Length: 348
Image: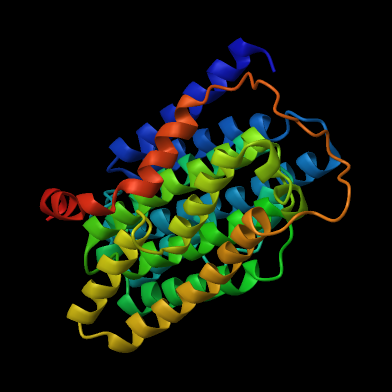
């Protein structure tokens, strides 16, 4: 892709998200979401491959549907209340519709069906943008609207997402689909605590972005898209394989890694809010996700692939990729747990 075109598309991505962050008017927020969607579509379709075009089409249709729902709901709210302000969502039908549309935008279950399919058709860097940056703008809107929404709806979305994210990833062999289901499960954790402690939602979103970035950048470095490709990475780059296994365990939420921190604090907050059954369901759903991360770790570190691979084997070649983003995201994804008291002090 032409570097000038790429620069325009990436700056449009940034502009769309910033516009949504800064807006308190529904039309402006909707415009930001649209700019965001239109900027990522050429990035998704840049490899002229049937799978990429199919994924782009699916993504465009789901995002357009969600944007139309947001526009319809905000118009309904403006018609009833007489203003377009986000903080004045007094109509329950409009606020429920908006949460549903935003859930479709970020891929919360049961509106998640597009997410694994779209992710599978993209290259790893575009997949990284889709599963991190593209979540920010809808999440900002969800956080603003959440206080006016029925808590039962958010609770149902959260529990369904963690269960579906854990259950769906069990049977996958494609790494991008596994990361898509992982994304769905993490979104569930963020949504369930949103009404009780929004700062924990932000904390979970931040740690999720760093852990997912580390995972995607590692896969990009090793050119791995399937589990059986992972089985041959340890002989090529043993240190990278070790850190990748730890990043995957961090995504699963094992102590003493960063991923344990948001889950621990969220379960603690749910227990404080007298929701022990919900906390138990969430903890058990996390075990489902942990199983498929452990499966990846097992394939990477404890097995030798019995078959030859069709992929081009990058045998200890010097990579042209910058290793700084990977190093930084891996360090943050592994070592932030001791900082928990400081982070808690900043967020409360």
